[in-house]
Image 1: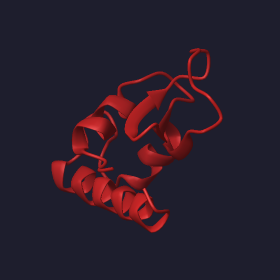
Image 2: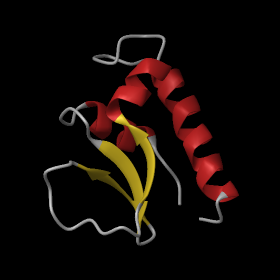
Image 3: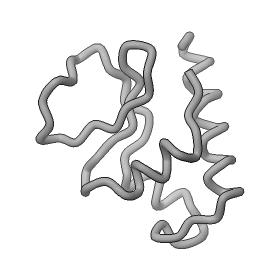
Image 4: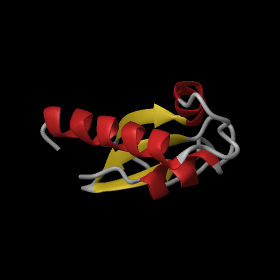
Length: 82
């Protein structure tokens, strides 16, 4: 599974407390009050954690910063066997 900059932009544009999760071979955004996500999903990063990791504004993040964050999260998934 590969996390893309599009995934991260979508996460930053989602509601508070949203998370990027790996579930069923896909990368999805989990909104806490949404139904349909089971316990088999693996939380990768919350919206708040991602915003803290970006030196530029999370309202208009730098593409290079997003690419580095996406690569880091993709590597983490690979290490977990995903």
